[in-house]
Image (cartoon, rainbow, N blue to C red; front, side, top):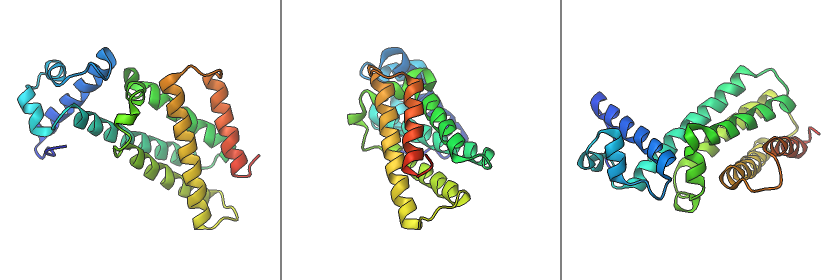
Amino acid sequence: MRKAPQQQRSKIIVDHILEATQHCIAQYGLLHTTTPKIAEKSGVSVGSIYQYFENKDQIIEELLRRKSELLGHQLKELVMQQENIPLDLLIPLAIELGFNALKADHGFFIEVLKHWHNYNHSQAAQILEKHFFEVGLYTFNKNPHQWDFEQVKHKSFVIINSTLFTMMRYVSQNNFLISEQQLKRELSSMILAYLGQK
């Protein structure tokens, strides 16, 4: 982001730009979304957009960053609300939340994931990893195992990345010979087996 908004009015303008970008991506696709289309949809002039963002990619990266933060907080909220349920019930709920988030907002994430090679350097993945790692630490502490901190860190890294990558790939391509429900079950089984729960 070129200039972070400080005043309330500026924050509202940036929110309008981001919301319009999301709608444009859903309507036109990522490749056909342009700054002029975003300007038209948001009611913010192209010149004003460039005060905050250098280009379309920077707008999309900010949108990804915010959505990743939101998903991370939603996962933390889910885990806190369900803190007394066992892992074999919590993990499927977390996977369901992830799939729902990836498919929400008129397919915004799905469209971006089709072009992930252009955005894999964005902060979005690191933000999700950070939140998921914190959830993992909290969950492992509530469900004590024989693992030390380093083992928890390593297991969290493998679970987070293998699960996220699989989910991202599935929702963005969706031409696999497995249903979404079956994939959710397989991911849950994989994680539980890796943790020695099944």
